[in-house]
Length: 393
Image (cartoon, rainbow, N blue to C red; front, side, top):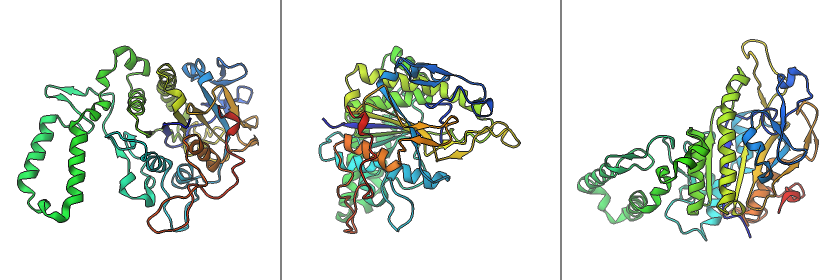
């Protein structure tokens, strides 16, 4: 059975491999800052000490410790990690979210768009590429950790009450004589569908007040906690692809002060999502992947202006995968004693994305539809030997 949905947690800016899923407790303080690793429920598998909640459910996920590519810039690295393509060549390829949305739209019949982003776009490139607006994501905006009810009832993403939405549609119908022309048929149809979504039951998928306080507290009353809870509700509704874009991982300066708080919130939220999906029997049909565009340099830069920072580093970094056909409790690849170099089983972005596509029932080597009539494939025509089949269930 292929995965029905994907949740992508994008740690924008590039999280450090040492302070996440590839700790090096035996390295010198110049690399690990004196911080430790902790054991997980899986014998022999460790995570950084800042991830105690994930350690308790590591049997549900697997770590890739040998991700690698050559791009040090945010834009080029993000494009490669999202599309499997190096920049250039004249074609702007779509990100994996748009591709999965397109391929899954044949079987998805929900009212919400098949590709949803919580809560802001990556902003580094067009995630839909040459596929066009039909498969563009719904970018919700807002903050899922704020109340969604006011005196007029449920407030959908965007913050407008139902009365305000109705007032605006009424005003539009009275003044928009131009839009009543037959040539605007497709435009008006899209508007009617948008109104149907806003006013219909599908919009309540975003209503976190329908969850128990216990569940909301389990994820954490933080932006990331409530965003991942919203992501769970979206895949429960059937949305094929959900991205949660989390900024703040570009820790050039005062890395450790920043990351300690950021990882605390993220650790709690990821662990809650994994356990929640598992308890609801959704994990076997939902892929979760957690990564950024690259990792961080492993030797700490203590000189001004960095004052204990880490910089961009794509040569060796880590990712997390779970569910949807990935086995839990596994480690793929190996880095050297400081997590600076891959020493075993390198995994490229093409290998990584190809594995997700395969488990979604999408042929990575199959044709990529495009309006130009070009003979393109979903991923570059490279060897499939690097895909993560050793951790397929």
